[in-house]
Image (cartoon, rainbow, N blue to C red):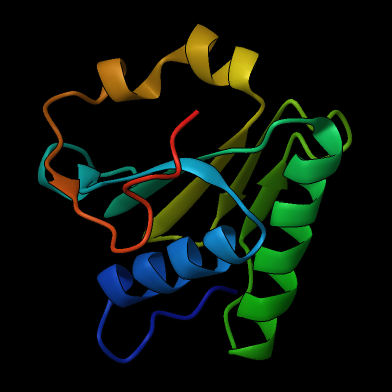
Length: 126
């Protein structure tokens, strides 16, 4: 079962973003969807250039978060590596290949959600 960090979902989301950057995740966006939906508090969107990189980012997140005491409630799409979803309850992490990111366009779908500025990701766009 996923645990919420002492300071809440925001800190978990920011930590996950830092971990994704460690594996060279691109075009990171953190959306505060909790203000407009009950699905989660935050969506973290990350792009990996290939299935191999999507797997590497996913593996790094799952392993590092587990070491910190956070366990995914659900993992979807890992086998294909086109769009992996890591559900941590208050934080849902979406890791896409570029084509999947463009096709599903979650930024547009959740355009009403406020974006959180992520330090270190400003020059990491595709």
